[in-house]
Length: 416
Image (tube, rainbow, N blue to C red):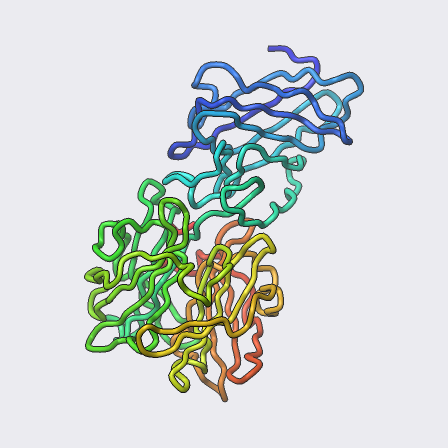
C-alpha cells in the first residue's frame, strides 16, 4: 500500500524453526530521536519461515534519516531474522542483516536445539543501519548467561585430538565433532578426517558425518566446550581417558570422564557421569569455556601437566593457565590467573576460539617450535590460521599464516 513516510521490510530466515507467532515491535532511531513502536502484526504467515513482510511506519514530524533500528520481542517463539530494510523519500535504503549465520531474537535468551549455535539477543537489540554495499558495524562480543545483551552460544568445532596410529594413507586421523552447520536439525555430529604430512598437509574425509549424540559416551551431549586428556591415562592399554567439558540442558558447565578406545572412538564409554565443572578449583569463576590447550613442553613434568584455558565472560576473551597432577584424584589448581587473550600476538583479531589442532609433524622442531591450526569464527564465517608457540618459560607465540577460509580444507566441507 502507499506509504508517505518510511517503508519497513522484514525478512524471516529460510531455516529450521525460524518463524514466530510472537509479538514483535520495531523502533527506528535518528539523531537521538526514536519512533513509537511498530507492531509487526498480522497473520502468523507474516513472520513465517522464509517470508517477507512490508509495513508502513508514520515517522514523527522532522524525523531524519534513520541511523539505527531496535527489535523487541514480548512473547511467543524465538525469531530468526535474515534482513530488515528501511526506505523513504530522498534517501537511500539501508538495513541490517542476520548473515552469515542468522541472529535470533528471543524473549528468554534460553538455548534451543534451533538457536544454540547462533547469536541470540534476549528481549531486544539495537543495530546500526548501513547502506547497501557498506560493511555493517561489528557486533559486540559478550557472553552473558541468560542476561540482557548479545552472546554467542555454543561453538562449531571440537575434537579430542589425533588417534595414536597412522591413518589409512599414512597421515594422522582425528575425530571432529561439529555442532550446528549443515545439520542444524541434529545437535551433534562426528566425522573422521585424515591430515597428511609435509608442507601442504592435505586433508581428506575418511568417514562422513554421523549423529554422534547416539553414541553411548555422548548421550545427552549437544554443546561441547572442550576435551581434556587425563594426563597419566593417555593411550594406556589401548585406550585413552578424557574429561569431556560440556553444557547441560540448563547451560551449566559439567564434565564427565570417558574411556576412548584407540581403535574406534565411537565405542567410548562413560567412566564417571556428569558433575559440575565448579568442582575443579582451577576453573573457579570461569566464563564460557572455548578451548583447553596443553602447554607443549609442560606435559607430565615432575608429575604435573600444564594447560591454557581460553574462555570468555563479562570482561571478554580471557586466558588462564592451570595445572593437573598425575594420580587420582588429579589435583588441579590455577597457575596463572585470567589475563586478556589479546596478550597473545598470534591471536590478534580473534574473538572466540573454536578449536586448536596441533600440526602433528611440527611439534618440538627446530630447537623447540610447536605449530598449531587455530579455527575461529570471524564476521564473515569460519576461518583458520597457523600459529607457533616456542618451548621455554616465556612460550613466545607468533602468527605463521594469516586467516584463510575453511574451504581450504576439503575434509571440512559443510561446516559453517
